[in-house]
Amino acid sequence: MLRKILTCFSLMLVLALAGTASAKPAELTGITAFDLNNETVRIEISYSGGKLDSSNVSTELREGLLRVELDNALPGRVSRVSGTQIQSDARNCVEKILVNKTQKRHTGIQVYFKEAVADNVTVLLEPANRSDKKDARIVLDVKKYSAPKEDTYSSYDGNGRIVVLDPGHGGSDWGAIGPTGVSEKSVSLAVSLKAERLLTDAGYQVVMTRTTDIDVAAPGVPDAAELQARVDKAPPNAELFISVHCNAFSNSNANGVETYHAPNAVKGSRLARLLNEELFRLGGLNNRGVKAARFYVMTHSQCPASLIELGFITNPREEKLLASSDYQQKLAQAITNAVNRYFNQGGYES
Ligand SMILES: [Zn+2]
Image (cartoon, rainbow, N blue to C red):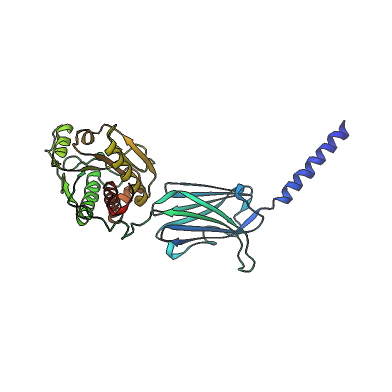
């Protein structure tokens, strides 16, 4: 009996040792971030020693933070101060890279992005290349939000169609306010004015419910009166009504873009979907989707209408983006693209 237990024990020991020997840990030899093309940032994690396969690599990308967990890997000589490199072409996008040993034979890497990136990452494992003297690598590709291509939607003509832009809030109504004091009313107005310019250049006739920081009806009137005053700005032959807002939530982690249409509004839901696609494509935030709701301006508008939430002003990262003129310009371009697609201009599918 005792002998049997001992045999059993030694067999387990042998198996345990064999297991350890066959899975020699990899050691990181370097991490480099660079701009692959204007749309993608690539992060290469090179290593030597042990072998890694896809089961050793897990990633999570949320709100501009990419977490990479490597099983059976050690940081080796790579630490934050040495062994990580953000090439100059990626410095406007990648803020910093941290490396730490999280458990025995386990390494965590965090890549912090400055610029909005899509919430998914492509992982590729490349073997070592002796002739190039390259170590084995884990290649991570992260999509940036793509800059609007100047010529993409250039071949359309708005034909004088009337589009109403409604910058949410204004005057005595500040809307939501971000952690550093950026107001929803200022962002909605800035983006709408930029979109007005782009749409006008494209041949649309744009009607603004406001072009300055004012209450459209009057300060202090009931909400319905203020919102009706905005709906009333639309001339009878207006073809679209787009109300521009920013989202807010008590939890500052809430993030992303969403667009709305009135329930059962066929044309309105198509407009909301196109706005959602373009805002997501060019803005690059998390996509919360297209939703139906009974917002006053949508249910009372005489033409197809959508209300768009550009992002969460209560989220510090999105507040910063929403306040930036460059980012506002991308959102304005997204609105313009969606309007063009709505009218099937320039040969783009709806
Ligand atoms: Zn609002």
